[in-house]
Length: 207
Image (cartoon, rainbow, N blue to C red; front, top):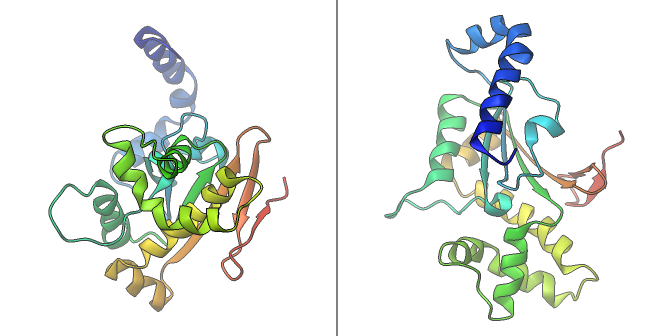
C-alpha cells in the first residue's frame, strides 16, 4: 500500500472479509482487552508480529519502535512511551509474557554500527540507538563475521536486561507471574529464532 486511497480500499476489503466473519469478536473486544502476551518489536514494515505469530485481534499487546529497544528504568524528565506501555501491560493488563522480537536487516542496529564509525544517523535516531552503545562495543570487540546480526541478537539481550530494571517487572518475574523471552525473525528466510533463557543462544523454531 502506497497511497491513502489504497489504505481506504484495504479497509473496505477488511470490512467485507475479516470483519464480516469476526464481527462478534470485535464487538467483544470493544468491551475491553485481556492479552496474555506483550511484544516489543521493531517498527520495521517487514516484521509484523501479528502476521508472524498468526495472531487474532486482542491476543497481542504490541509496542513497536526503532530496533525493538527497551530503555532502562528512569523516573527523570522526558516522555517515556515504551516505559508507559510497559507499565500498563504489566500492572493493568497483567500480561504473563513479554517478548522482545528483533529481526534481520534492522535499520536501527545499522544506525548504531554507523555511530561506531563516527557517522551518527539522524537527530532523534542516534540518541535512541545509543541504548546499544555498550552492546555494540562488546560485539565489535569479538570481531564477529556478521556484526549486524550479532548486534541484532545482542540488542535483544540489552532490552531483556533493561526490562529487569523496572521494579514492577522484576517483582512479577520473581513471583513467577511474568516470563521474559527473546526472539529474532529472519525476514528473507521467514524463519523465527527463539532465545534460550538459560544459555542466551538463539535457535530456529521448527516450522
